[in-house]
Image (cartoon, rainbow, N blue to C red; front, side, top):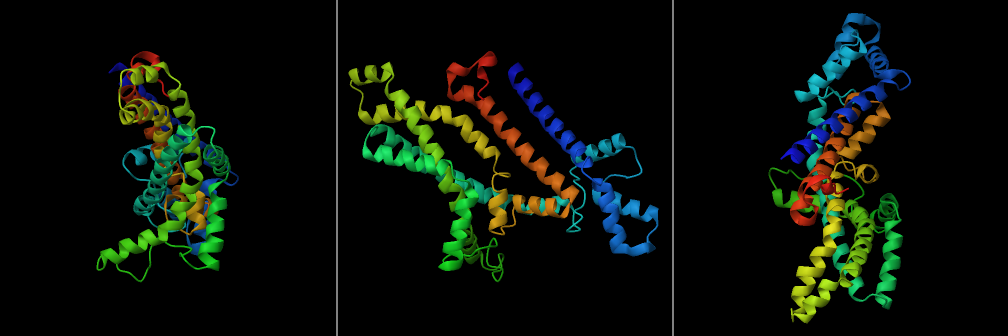
Length: 337
């Protein structure tokens, strides 16, 4: 229980530190967010607005009174975050929560689907590679895995867009679904369209992802296959199926658990470039738009969401690793990363 409380406390502190650092860093940028907001408002409203009216608009958009000292602005911002108020987007003119909120399921759909495919295919392929260690299949698969693991996802995305999108026009090059379909009236067509539009973004991340999982599984499985307890299991007359599932697979996958949970924690930030290549309005898409437009409230909202997801993923991995591996229970040895 003491360890559980300690880890939760560390996670809360990490989130607090990252948010505080981001708040300070953004305000150290040339011009600063308040000056940029003021310039935008003056450009939109002309010279008819008084300084007080401009400050009121800045406070409405950012949730911060520009006349206050920086430390009071920081307190106001943190209080607003606790209350679920991320401010108002400068570029879109809507509350940040109403922009990022609807985008979350779409980003989760892409990244979770890609992670599931990459992990499943990678682990299965890695197990076969270990079983056929030294064979032509193993050598060839290892080479392919190394190449894919070293290839950025955006390279595959650009190739898919160029060939499957523009040249052969097999898949759409942008959007989340066909805008002509009413999701409320025709749910089956909407679901089919969403899957159709998600094929290339998901494939871009899954293709480069499964190579790393395959190599990790291969290395772990080869190590496990050389353990003495497997020889004992064979001498006891256990079936090959039981040895493969109960001893080899479980112990080979176990070291990959932490990496899997960290990968789950990156579901919001792992598709930033991919979403922009495919013009797919997810969290990463809006984050890049916010950075380009210097939309500081929306930018901070995206950073906070990505940070919280990452910290939660690592914390869950650390707290549950001891359940999967009893050897890791107790004391500082339970640190799994």
